[in-house]
Structure formats: C-alpha cells, structure tokens
Image (cartoon, rainbow, N blue to C red; front, side, top):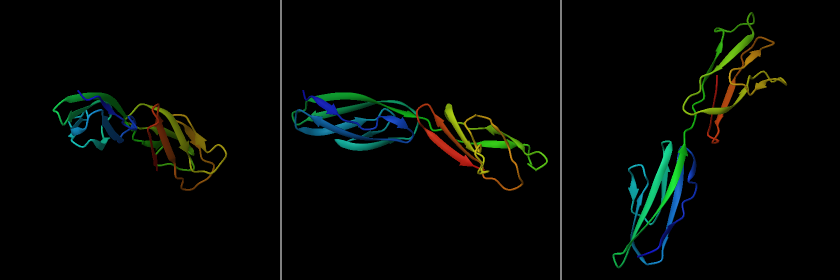
Length: 161
C-alpha cells in the first residue's frame, strides 16, 4: 500500500480561502482523487482550490498506484467569515444646529472585535475605536466618514459614507 502525504498551504484564513494542494507517494502514482469536504473534488495530483463559504472542511486525498493499491490521507481547512461593514449617523439630516453626530455600527456577517472610525475632519481626535461613537463636528461642510471593522480571525472590511 502506498504511503501518501499531502502538503496543503494556507489551510486557515478568511473567505475566500484559496489552498494549494501538493501530494506525494512512496509508490509511482497512477491517479489522485481529492475530496475538498464541500461536495467538490479534483483528479489532479497537485491542485488549487478556493473555499467561498465559511466553515471547517475535511479534505481527503486518495492515491492509487500502478499496482491498484490505494492510500489515503486527510487534512482540515478552516475558512472564517468576512464581515460586511455598514453604519449610519444620526440625526438625519445633519446640520450645524446639531453637530454632535451619533454613529451606529450596522456591520454584519461575522462577529466583529475591532472598529476603527475616521470622521473625515482631519483633527487630532478625528478617530475612534468604539463600536458606536459620537463625534462633534466643529464646522459646516461635507465629511467623508470611514469605518474599518475586523474579526478576531483577522477578517476585514471597510466602507465610507
């Protein structure tokens, strides 16, 4: 029976998680069959595959040598969800009569652990790491507000309004 090994790269990360799979065997290989754990498969002995959904996937490589002997090896890939950054500010419409704006994080898709706001006013205290900060604008104008969010697994997204 052939002794089979696989060398996957990048088996943990954010969606889309793209993995390069390399196989080797102690016997000359006739065929390789990869099962990626999500219902998809491939017959190349060395292949690339991308996981587009979050989850933990059991990967199996089955190698058949020229004598018909079969060897199998398994590994796991974990793809973490990416957040979808979103927010709004209130009151709406904003005005110089009410320059203290409450920003509300509406981000979805994954549990967020870090927020970084830039209120677009170019001041020293023009940023915040709070989830739902308030910001007092000192002058009239149009300001581009930027929100960057990140999960505990390093998956990120950002938006601006």
